[in-house]
Length: 446
Image (cartoon, rainbow, N blue to C red; front, top):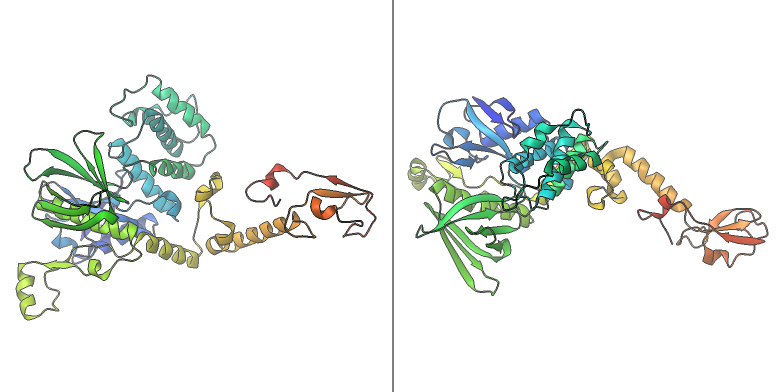
C-alpha cells in the first residue's frame, strides 16, 4: 500500500507500507527518509476526512480503519508537539520545524506581535534560503511572499521592505541552519506558539469563538481579538466530548468551579479537541504518560458484540490516544540513543553566545564525544593556568620582579617575600590585567 506524504514545503514523499500497517509505521518510514532517527515523537500525520476536516492520524491504529477512499492515501507531515529549538538534537528535525513554522507564519496561524518582529522573521527566512544579502540579487520574491506576515490591526509601514533588508544585512555570514534556528527561537516567544486551534460556538449557537490548546493550557478567544481567557492545565478538573458537544470543568481564578459547554462543527472535531487537551497535557506537563491514557480504547459495533463473550479480544479495538512519551522522555531517549551512535550534532551554538542555546562544559563530554572531552580538558587546564597557585581560588593578577613570574593574586602576593616558583627575592610586585576574553564567560576568577 502506497502513501503520499507532503512536507510543509509541498515536497511529497512516497512511502510503501503493509495494507494492515498502523500509522506509526508510516510515520517512521517518512522520518527515516528525512534522516530523523530518534525524534519522530514530535511529529504526526494529518489527513482530510470525508467531511473535509483535517484530522490527526492515530498512529496506534491501522491506517485503513481511519482513512476512506482508495490508495494511495495522502497525508501531511506536521509538527504535533512544538518545543523550543534548543531541545532539538538533530539538524533534520530542526529543519522540519522551520518549514512548518514558516508555513504557519505565511498562513496566519502564528500571530506576530508587530511589523518590526515580522521584518526580523522574514530576514531570517531570506538568510536561511538565499544566504547573505546582495544588492544585485536581493530576494524580493521572498520579501513579497511574506508581506502578509504581521498584525492585521496595524497598517503595514511604507518602509517595510527596507526594514527587512536592513535586518537581512545584519545577518551576514550566518549559516542557513543558524538562521533557521533563530527564526524558531523568535517564533517560540509568540503567544500562539504550539497552539492547536478549534472553532467553537456556545450551545445555543448564538456566538462563535476559538479555543486554542497549547503547551501551557487552553486559551479561549472571543470574537473581540483583545478579549481572551487563559485556562492552565492545573485548573482543569475534567473534560469530555459527546457527539458535537464538548464539556470542560475548571477552576476560575477565584477558586470557583466553572463549566464550559460548547459545540463544534462535527463529532470528530469534538473528539479531536478532547484528544488534543489530553495529549498535550500529558506531553508537556506530566513526568510520564499514565497507563490510563495509553490503554484507553473504544470498539466498533462488531467488536463490542464479540467482547461480551471474550473481553481480551482485539477485534474492533481503536485506541483513543497515540501519545506514548512526554517531552522530557522524548528528549532523554533521543539524547541517549544519538550519543550511543555518536551522531549528536548541535551547530547553532557555534553561531551564538546565548547560554540557553549552548551546551554547558560539564555536559559537553556526554553529548559530543571525544572531541568535546578534549575541549573540556583544555578548558580545565586554562582555568587552572589563570588561577592563583597559592590559594587556588582567585585569578592571577600580580607579577613579581625582577623574575617576572605571574602566578599569584594580589592578596597572596602581598604575603610573599620570595617568588614561590624560582625562590628569587621579590623587589617589586605589579598589578597586571588579563585579556578581556579571559575575564568573560565565567573565566574571570576574581
